[in-house]
Length: 308
Ligand SMILES: *Cc1c(COP(=O)(O)O)cnc(C)c1O
Image 1 (spheres, helix red, strand yellow):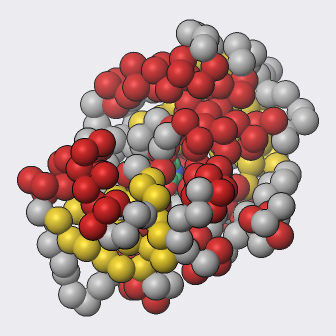
Image 2 (tube, rainbow, N blue to C red):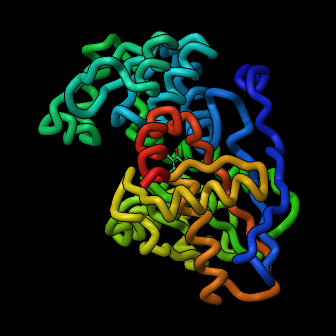
């Protein structure tokens, strides 16, 4: 198929990982961060069927929304240049120069950036507002913030279907909830999914995820939970302890994590095992959802944390 000529998505590597906290539990990681240098992790999974639909409908432009450090903005810009769409990124807040590494990449990949004050950006999920923007930019295919919609779930579900081995638990970082919903849908009542919200007050995501799962599968699946205490102060917040943890994980396993999503997820997994909230003798598949591009914009903060 057109898109798969460009991206080898099948069977991202699954490998076992070690950490002293994992004692008694077999932990594996699905390395979605390796799918493609620019279009990695869950952002590719969520974009795939949206891109196919946009092509089928004859759209030549994609329009989407995000913050200045958004992995989704980065991925849409990459998809645009790989697959020949013009891209428009509606960015929350004011322009900051020089551009950070995420937006610099977006612009270099041809994305047109449009900054909206927060008061207007707030309307990003309203259908009328999206329609207005789509028209303004010449009939663009609108992809919601974070890339989460029902077509996104379909791509995420494939990530689980292609995994032939079954695990007792599946764990992933949660932002908008689309990735969680896609995994839960694919598990279809088997095993257990644990989601780790990267933001504070993540309990509000439970009904959001339930609604997505229900719309997609027609079922009210219950074999999942969110562990909401691993946000480290809020979205994009992290501390020295988390950075030291991800560094130790990388040293032991040779796998990079970033502190906004995958670092929090892996820290949570270690803590849940330590506290016996994941049973001894079980197996876990952790999803590496990617996001490593974000490290370029975090270098200064990480260096500062480690020096103090
Ligand atoms: C966007 C993102 C998530 C969150 O995915 P959602 O589908 O929005 O919940 C998790 N990890 C990484 C690395 C991301 O970029």
